[in-house]
Length: 120
Length: 366
Image (cartoon, rainbow over all chains, first blue to last red):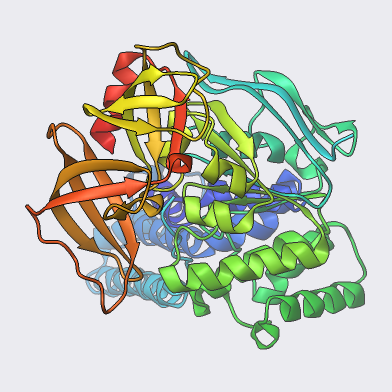
């Protein structure tokens, strides 16, 4: 998540955009909500989907949760059933792929929208 | 009282001084340029007017009000950046109207003002485009409209044309000047391009290493440079050292050859060395002027409308550039040819008696 947002911040010229907004009279909240976050939309979404894809298959942390989770459920099924774990694993695999697909879908739309800034 | 006043501005970043004792008083509606090489403190000074940097000492006042400690968003100063800094998530209309929406103007007023400004910058049909769909020149026009939308007291432009190609630069330069004149807005323009500064400004502030070298109209700065730095930075002056032979009559000896200045030398006594400057366009080949220097042609450069001929003076130590207008009938001397350069006494600018190192540096650069 951090890497994705970091890359997003590097792709836009945050300093100039902030300064431009300030010179137009905007305060920090407006700058954040109307300028910075909309331009980080793609990175935030990519980060979120990537995290989701990783978390779906996560077992160790999930076993410590008080609530039942997907990872431990596969493991539990694997203990006493033959076919279900394979099916659930395939579903988890599919979910990961869907998340990846969504990243590239949103990423493609936005790549052209990132402003190419001139030399500073 | 001046409209924009910078008094005793200093800026230090740790140990280094970026701006030293900067004083400027600009009148309402004046177009002032800060001209200097990279790192001379011109952008830092501009950013202090905008409020993005706090001066270490000194005050910034607009229309009699001290705004030194005011936040950038409380200043009503419009800024145009070299990198355009348009909001990529907003359309052209969204960008131009941003400042008005911040000021909570009613929607119909915002729309009306956006339409007016887009007509002013000749992009009335681009309101719904996104910045990435526009060319560099168009983006910078939108950035200008966005800065003008809030009717700022002062308009600041930070090398706005540096990222554009040569032709667009000239077109946009003229447009900026026309818009500035029609709105009568006080403008500060930062550039390292002397041609831009000379063509746009009412006054130019020439800066070097954080200090002001000279403030004057383009005419004054070009024709009467106050220091050897100004002389070498503005235009392509020949800067060289001469010895004073007769201060009262303006007699000098350069490269062992006698020359004469139009005015008496007041800054140095007989026998002392002074820095003099000769404008390439004031020199000509042949024996026409009162001052004559013998030398050998080193090389000839074709620059379109002018032809620059570099001549080694007799001693071989000094190289002088001579500019002549291009003309199909022009006979250009060959490299190695023996020539005489001549110029009127008015072409000799006696600048200062510099420390030896500076003069040598300048000669090496020239």
